[in-house]
Length: 173
Image 1: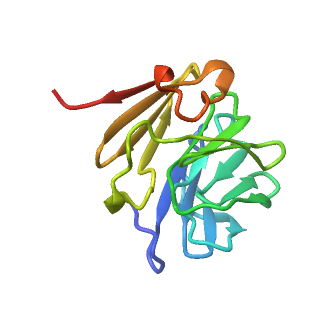
Image 2 (image 1 turned 120 degrees about the vertical axis):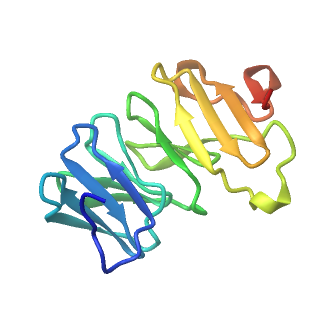
């Protein structure tokens, strides 16, 4: 490795969109490091383990599975009810997807809850392992041990729960 940050268990990491900040998730906080020299430039407190860190597309916000922070002011905006699910922002940065829940960033309110198009396997404990938003914001991909699910998202919001016409299941082969 080029450099090692030792001393604490790191549960997640994310680079800011401009490449200047490395966010590292710890048990009850997030460390913000200058990428050039890995000096600590800030710390964000959390009531939970900071998992699945992701920056908003403009870099102004940082989210974990349970929190949304304003980066420049180093301040917690919202604490979300979550179970360690994957995270993804819409391309306009207005919606944060945490697992099956879609949260409006400006209010911290849940605006939609997605429903799996197939029965979820009990071994996953309903945890959404990975999420990815298409660059145009029209598709949301959800990966889990049982496969990949893709939703069409008109106007940046998910279709109604159980709307199978907008949901696709991708299988190997």
